[in-house]
Amino acid sequence: MSRGERKHGSCGHVRGLHTPETPPRTPQPATLPPGPVKTPAPRPAVELYQGRVFRAAVDVLRARGCARLVILSALHLALAEDDVVAPYERCLADLDAAGRRAWALAARAKLAIVLANDPGAEVLAIVPALYAPALADLPRVERLFAGLPQGQLYQALRRELEPLTPASPA
Image (cartoon, rainbow, N blue to C red; front, side, top):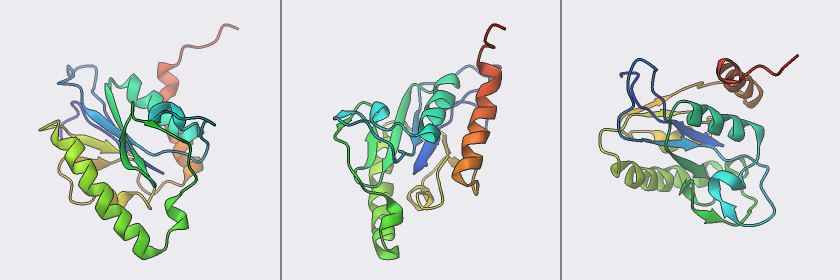
């Protein structure tokens, strides 16, 4: 897969990226995981989720030129970043195996529809293991940071952002 525009997904993520030497193609969607920390009132999905891993993933995607994000949700399956949603309490870890399989099938179907709007788009995904089945069999998906637990995932995202973050004055 080329290192042109790509996407991610995680509590599931998908991200968009391009290398400096490769001009970005049409803006691609990126898939992200929500986090357990949410705002107290309805907000656009990208603002609703406040967990540190989610926020770091958004920062990485934006820094890499991703113009559109898609968020995998335990309740809503796949959300456009500007979809307004009320806070909710649902996590895939709370579902039994059959419930998680049913969620993955439904989320995959919804994500395939969203990605169909971007034919030829490549997808980079950053998702915890429970969310990864939603990405199975989707074309042009590469899962990044696979196998990292949340704490290590956060550190990997922060390391990726370090060169992009201006140093604070001493």
